[in-house]
Image 1 (cartoon, rainbow, N blue to C red):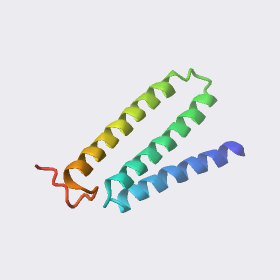
Image 2 (cartoon, helix red, strand yellow):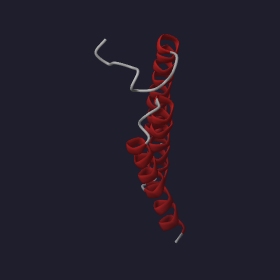
Image 3 (tube, rainbow, N blue to C red):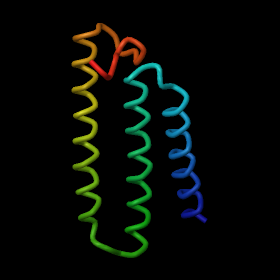
Length: 97
């Protein structure tokens, strides 16, 4: 019963993160936060899955390393965008320039 509740919470986290990612695409900061929320839900799923099969948790450490790198790259893009354009609106940022 506890596992079912955890799976339902993880699925709700994943769906809500995707809904925020799709609907709130005006600001880059909100998009990055929703991506981190999706990564967190996937991490919780990996923890739950790997605890059931009693496998080593080395893959979790690798996943965390990649998610931290993704967060750092997103934050550096956000800082450079705010320095050059003054805000984090996607409409003022032309990707072709």
